[in-house]
Every structure is written in structure tokens, then in C-alpha cells.
Amino acid sequence: MSSVPDRVLKQAKSRDFHPSVRIGKSGLTDTVIEEVINQLKSRELVKVKMNKGLFEREQRAEVWSYIATETKSTVVLQRGNIGVLWRS
Image (cartoon, rainbow, N blue to C red; front, side, top):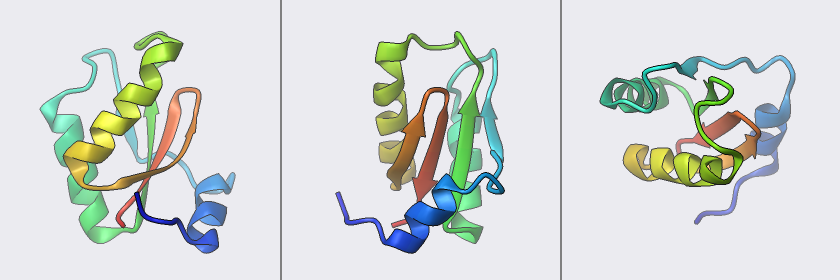
């Protein structure tokens, strides 16, 4: 895992940085993965929000890790049902 620059962490934690991808009631589909990949091509960070109750609290870290692996990105921040991915 690569070291995340401070500027990237600062942007990821910003309240002005809103989710651009949502994992809805259909769950983690290929379409969601494709959308994250497409967004990472044009921007450095992508914020993803999953519906509450979609995954158990213990499963969330695994979900973020899976998305990062599939999209060849790095999980910069994960809080509850929000995750930020960085095109490293």
C-alpha cells in the first residue's frame, strides 16, 4: 500500500467533498465498479456512499478493500458507510 500524501487526506476529509458514487439496494454490482473506474480516470479521488444496512459493520472494511482491489486504487478513508478511493 502506498503512502497517501497529506493534501489527498485533507481533501478526502473535507466536508465539501461529496459522494459521487452510491451503492444502492442492488448492492455491489459490476456497474458500481465500472463507475468508480471511470471516475478515477478523470479525477484523483472518488467518494463512495453505501446505503445503511446494506452490509454489516464487520463487512464494510472487506467491501472497501474489494472495491480498491477491483479498481486498482487505494482506500484513503473509510468511516461507516462512506469510503474515499484514491487513484494512486
